Image 1 (cartoon, rainbow, N blue to C red):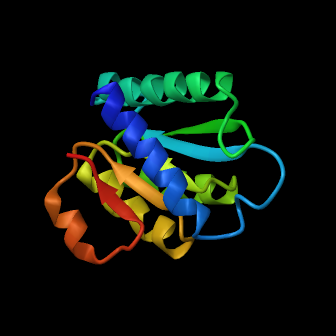
Image 2: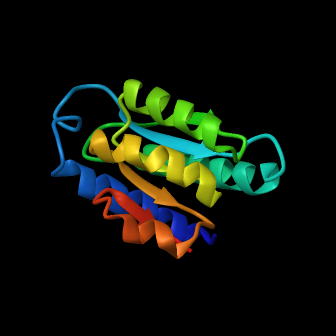
Length: 144
């Protein structure tokens, strides 16, 4: 995924979330989740997602943050597995993220998307099947 695509994804997720709840009205950092296979079979792809998001957030924070607040990245390794993805979904929601970049596999996205949807957390997904967009989740966006 190009830097421009990642920046667009991050920006879109944050802008969509600004009208979605009270998370941005609070003090403190704006929390963005990265759910990706940091270890396992797709580790190279997952680490690329993590590194790209962290670089973009570092640049944005150096430029003053977003809406006068810093952005904080919270990473969860789903190993590309559905069982771990559901755990990541619950963890990131509990950590107060307003949006999640990831995951990389269709099975992991399928396990996490209903959790994010129920919590009104925006989710973008890389490398997933187009059938996921047909599930009716209002907070799920596919990049590939």
